[in-house]
Length: 215
Image (cartoon, rainbow, N blue to C red; front, side, top):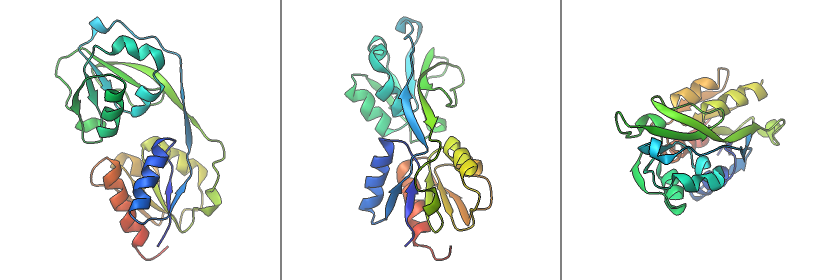
């Protein structure tokens, strides 16, 4: 069985690794980014009807400014983000299926989106960056990638992986979405996207690739 390499930054990397380990997969962690908070100022919550969270990192790294926004109902991208928002004291109005395109957002509402500096913005919402993901210059374990399956959780991770890896012929890609798969470019032994944009579907795909014969 091929090993599975997880590129997510912590703490998401360890959560994915624990799920993969429970599935009997051999897991290696090789985070490509380090997530850090950045300075930001919370706007007046009365100017908005709801808060959009497309990553748990917005809650994890939002800091004291989040207190101002607690009156706003939250629309979360997935259950992990929703759980963290509830633990922080927010009221969650809706939970998506794990991808920003599958969220149930109120039409015509005044929406505030807390996001990362390089993340995709939500149309028709005011976006404020509260964290940033710094690329790791030389991730440890790059030379061990041949013969493995790599889990790619975002298009940005796919682009970064493509920058770092030139010899791709013995590396398979399990991507969380078609966009993440496309960002990896060509030359890999296999590139497949999960049926749905969440961790469980990605790991199901990764398990199939890990168990498949060939390079």
